[in-house]
Image (cartoon, rainbow, N blue to C red; front, side, top):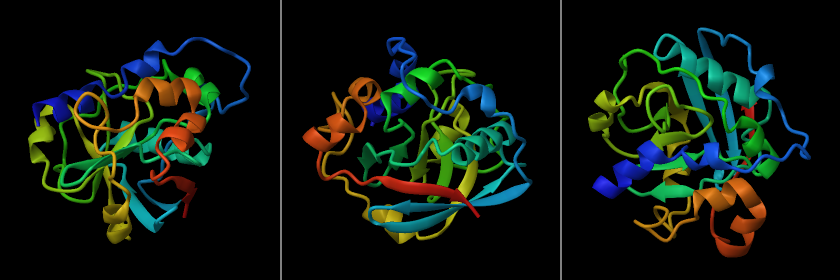
Length: 212
């Protein structure tokens, strides 16, 4: 469990280490300036079916705004559920295109205040590499992970429909190395979905993320 938590804390670190390359045309972090509505919903169409996230801006205003902009810009379309640890959480948010990952690698945003909501089953939270280091990666809690509340993991929304779909996401590979057989995050960031399709064919994907 210590390894799992350490990986969760560090999950966005390698994003900031990707090599520079300006060849890809991707949504720019400079476009992510919209303020989210007080409450909004996002439909996640996946390879296992659909589920819906309801976001509450008063839970975590900065997280709600970032997620709103990422969905609006199409950032999560075709992204993988690359880290599925049954009983703990499922994680996504590394773009299918290495160019997008390079573009967003330094697009950190500040932490929200102490959580108004706990990391209970079905809540949705940004991963972080440390204080004020959140970027694009998000996880959905499979169980009661309230121990994360005091570690900077602030829920901004909750799955309100289709949690069975979230439960069904393929967990064959489990956590990433060294704790599991899952993908290396640095390789997803630098090689994109071509790496995942070749080496982890059972992973599930987000076909589209849409504001409702």
